[in-house]
Length: 416
View 1 (cartoon, rainbow, N blue to C red):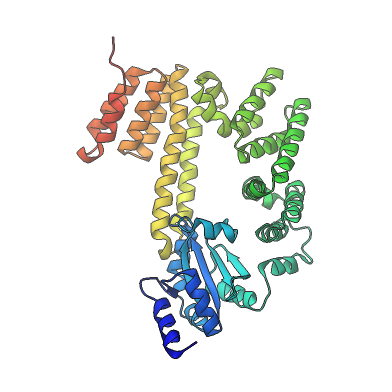
View 2 (spheres, rainbow, N blue to C red):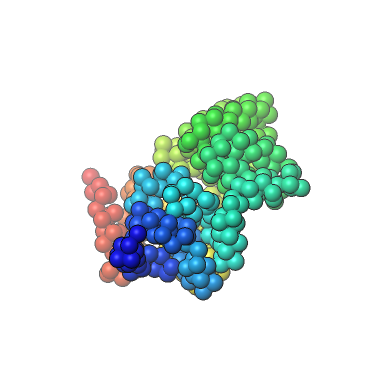
């Protein structure tokens, strides 16, 4: 390549408006530059809504040691995976952030998935350039930890990332079947692990079939013993992961047809089927799931406040994402608890319903809360209560926060 061509290439890929160590360029350009400079290409696949991506921007990419290492070894590119859909798909980008390392001809050297602080990023990046993949590291970590569902799960994650789906499923299922023996793994087993398996199922349908088989077996055992707490937990969690809400309602109907449900079984089912029961206007059934309907609401609010404490501990770089998460979680808590408010009104438990409304207004006294309560009461055909809570909101809210509430009130039919 001539000196002029080399200078021209350098100009076309020079950093401009891209942040941190990243160049404002195309993939083809940085691949050509990597070949010319004897470096690798590093791509940060992100999304605008991804909290860990923003934390990576605020911390790791600003670290002087990281910037020095990238300048010496890589040409960095930052791509929004939701804009570069075809490119992200071709490289099997399924989680964010994913930092991909490519050879100049475009083949993959390795990848780093999820947020990493500066030290962890440098360690894994050096491994990637040395040909030691994340899968190889995970396999090494498994030695001596074969009975650890957490370590096996990480190995399964890397197998899935590498496209070795059959092996990944085998490891994930080992974690599900054996993880129940580990009390500290229970929460992971019934949430993140099931999410990992269902995500694998999008590319490898046997994963979904394996979950369905375990769900069916748990439901069959419940038919013989309706008080089997472990089987109830598994069946409900798998249905949640498979987005089979109607299946959990059907399970509830089958079990209670045999005998009154034990309290702990109702607790397992309660949060899962409250929404579909209320949507079907099965208000009496929804309320009877809970010994203390008001306690469901106060408990949900307390749960949010516990999470808020966790969010408040986030570092400065995550403040904006933290605030967005807080608002979203608070709104979801109001929406969920308003279902209980609707069920209470629909089953003529107006006194308790009024207490629930008080709790929610104290918890989040804005126009969205009042509007949600108005619409919930209207669906339960409690028109007087809908108007009363609406008028309460109009009196309490500032002018700027009343428009949404007025819209909600306008949907209530006039009395005949």
